[in-house]
Image (cartoon, rainbow, N blue to C red; front, side):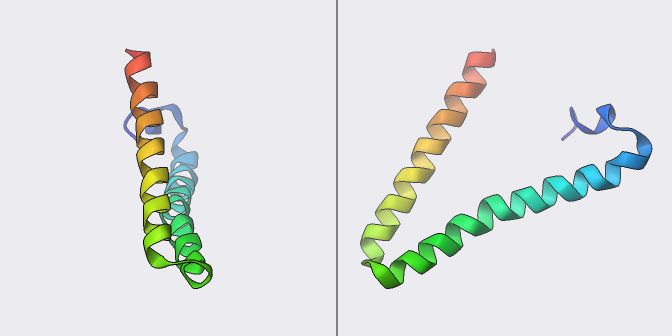
Length: 70
């Protein structure tokens, strides 16, 4: 956030922050909603394992991306 805000003009910062927060809430909320909807169709244990595996894979991709930049 500290690297992004200085690049925006003063009149654009509110919109930039609002966009950042909306995307953050969607990134956290949509997977939880999909997992909750999937529980009705499948066993909760299976959904939890798949959800956890996806989180682990995304974390690993993020870690690789960060370490590749340095």
